[in-house]
Length: 302
Image 1: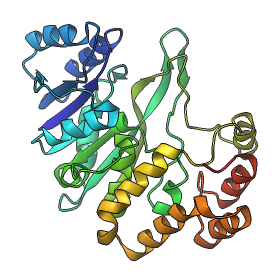
Image 2: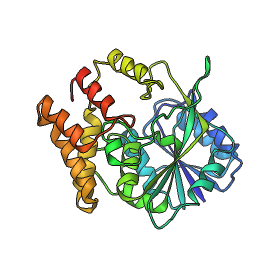
Image 3: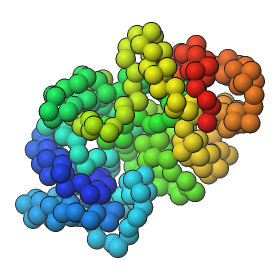
């Protein structure tokens, strides 16, 4: 059994297309749990109509509102009892074999540990078609690869097991994003795996920014310069990491604790001290310490 968890807010334009792509899955033993965060459009009405067509669709009515994106998704995890969960955005489109392939992948791993598996996704615009065959271009499995990403891996491309649910539903004082918590939990307490096949269309809106840089080092540096007004460390994700560490720090491996503590101390350091610690602890960006140092030279820190 798989619970697909959809957090919605003012999603009337695209939510039906997303839900119908779930209804068309080759894997049939699923339940779509939807929690709306107080939409002011027709999102809930559309969802209730779809639930009338397919009893596997459950629109939760618990009076809980204004949780924000991350809080809404974590709330949905707390309502699930399935063996596996998948996050689902309200505006993407899943390929018909997505759930089947993700379930097959995660079932091959040790279920006594928290497990998360990520697929890839097509970067897609309905007017322009497929913009890129892969939306995810970096595949972190360690803390030193993760801390300077300013993000998690795309949550809607994930499947995770019951042991992972037990970890990520422990309350934090602050959430940057649900996928940030999921990646940190997988790296610190379980295992993180990647399917490189694209199994969904990730809708690229005009106002969206993708965190992925083009392939070559020269293009990555050019993009860093183009976006030099953006801080090296995102404040939301810094605070999210700090909140995660406050709850889980005592349970972490000593090496992970050391790296996180060093990262959290960096805003108070001068430039040369930060550079020294990036080299000392071998922090990375796109698997490269050199790229991270170049980016630090281009951008303000936090």
